[in-house]
Image 1 (cartoon, rainbow, N blue to C red):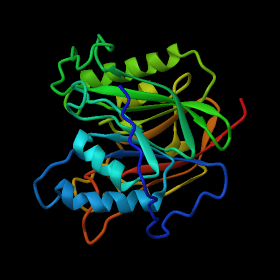
Image 2 (image 1 turned 90 degrees about the vertical axis):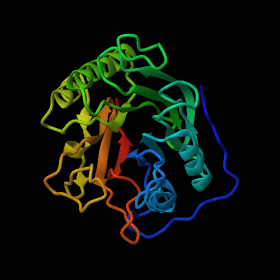
Image 3 (image 1 turned 180 degrees about the vertical axis):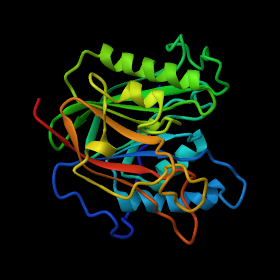
Image 4 (image 1 turned 60 degrees about the horizontal axis):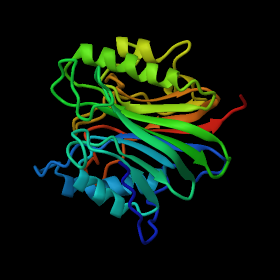
Length: 283
């Protein structure tokens, strides 16, 4: 199932924390939205305008979101009209959380897409076989970059928050699916992995030879190192980095940063988004 919603008016940028794109860099964001809770002081109605302002400031070309509910994603679509989106609820149809992929339609053209579930039966919608209580899934899209003409794959996911076994098997399945593509095209994998970078079995599976590269380690320039889950509290320099942007194939990171955007003390989510500026490289 594809969900594509087209806006009617253009948005405007807020602030100057990130300079405009002055080259062919593809700006990618991973962003756990935090589901649309109605409970103050961090309800979705309170966070929604802050999320819009953050996206307007960062101006990503491509966003892998996690936890978004259908109504919440429709709100976001209305707020960022330069983007279209692709997604499916993890419980099927519009039900449950989405791994929705938002893309700037002037920059990117989707060529193919699909979804699979993190289970022993990945083609079965809403399947769970590894003991985790929440259904977990991947949404992927094959894009053509209208600026460079390059094609690439984008995978977006959210690993389980409770079951270590489910996270381990999820990492193995995602890597196997990527290897099964047998492609020389770049692959970008983003998500909330609920695992500490450089200190987890999930990371060891996904980052390494014949797997992916971590943009945080390979970028020519990076921002301050922080924990990416903050729970609406002050940023922690010693916190775990659980939201990642990983690369495979002929693509590299020019820069990356953890975005601590807030407005009047309100954060847009309980996770900090992570942004990377990517450059396609020669094969």
